[in-house]
Image (cartoon, rainbow, N blue to C red; front, side, top):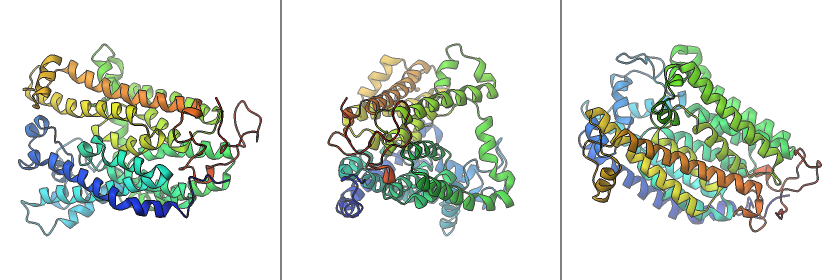
Length: 470
């Protein structure tokens, strides 16, 4: 059975009609994001300016610090000057960095750093457009709303150029679009490439497998998994064989990394939780253990919910479960959640609250680093509010307590959004996507499928495409 909302013949036509508008608006927001970085770019991203003006990027400094300016090739060549000796990103991100380094070679030596940043920003803007269009395609008849929510989000404007995350975001969005078009092998291949760019898309295999099990879609699941493994191996094996030490740097660095900015552990360690802060193994165990407990709960929800959850709902929840107890939560990680949040719950009120939480954290982290770098106590809450109302950065940055409030605001708003998604799953009649009888526009072979495996209900008794009254 196929939902009327996911007509393969109509989806490309709908997207073609919306593409010019969505492309133009996304390009405009990306241009505004580039302009937001110009106060820092004009002084070559001097750290004091980047923190006071909240326009930091990893792209410019890492061009020099990771040896790209000296012609070093990621993974194959090492560098000195830090505890790291190789690029600490998965191989597809490293390849992206190397590609841009080659593209800017015609520039003069003094101009290459800024050229590297600007060319990278241009390519990331293209990837942002791809992510928006893919998300709109997946949303079915709500394509315009979904596309606009992603394209016009403050998160995209503020964080698009902090790091290379949009590469994995775009590939993940394309993978979901391929899955929704009932092309599981292609979806798997795109997902494998996304995992080769960032670790987090690996988490999406769980929801895909669980929903395929519930619907008995064994063939599609096998083709998806084969495509994922094949694409990931194709990209990774050559580097593993010829540059093993460089290849494993990402995994070693991730394992040995301590508590970093944005993590809930950062707040906890400043309120008496000292154990994990001093013991990386204990920190990894606590974070991973918490995630596994949350993931187990999501698995039970996937198999026991009164109606099979929509794919974006589970993908969003598993990603939130990974991020909440993580020891690192950088500002640009909001991009990971953005397309999935829009697809999981395309309602504006909670989305706007979440975006406000992300804005608070975005400015909070830079202003806190301003006080840390200047070794000043920073402004208290009233001083911070007064400075913001004057459209200015607090002189000397903000205090640790104010930063903790900003961190908790983001944590709480993401948790709120996740709780609302869970409520939609438990009460399908509250799900705005399914309110008029639609099943799962992103589901592909899952859309309208009959349940085969479900906890607490007789097998085969439930048809996912039929609305459930609750």
